[in-house]
Length: 258
Image (cartoon, rainbow, N blue to C red):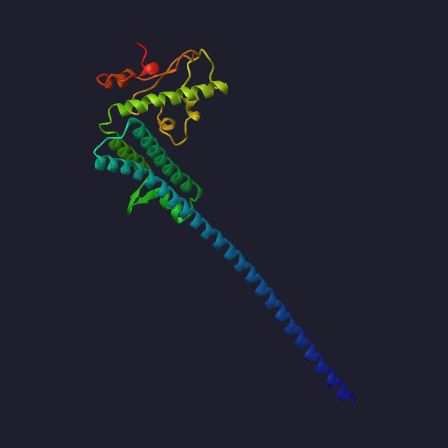
């Protein structure tokens, strides 16, 4: 009887050991599964973030492309309309189309630069940085986009005559307005000679004047005069005036000082 009890206790002991070992293995396996699940979630999270960045970079690239191409279409459609109507745009219409196109080109270029800087580790960000925008199947690096902008607008300016003078005179008004804002904010004071850098922040960021370096549309410098309250404080250059002498264009208060 004692022998039987001893044998039974031994069997029970072995079973308990076996259950204990099995339980430990199940526990160990559960820990491994949890660790793997955690790692998978981390991988999934990283992967999702990367995919989201790629989509965001692509959307930014597409937006820059659309903006640039819209600017091209604005100028191109105006030229086509002139050809069909066999009539040139009025000076007012030319000015409107020119500024719309210029700002659109600059906005597209700026958007491409910002996207390349914001998403440097993505495919589309690197593509923007190295190859620029893809326009009609061709790559245009950012410097080439600026050249493309200038070529389109130079073509648009051809044989415009007094329309160019009209635009330049109106840019003088914008410069005067910028000087007035600078005076109000204390950036400049009466009786001093303002610099272009002091008034530059008051131009439209993507507009022509903001990136002109103080030159008119023909590449001649505007002259900023000593600030006085009883007159305009900007003058066109004599070179620009002389280009329109035959047309007898009226520069008014913006005519160069003799």
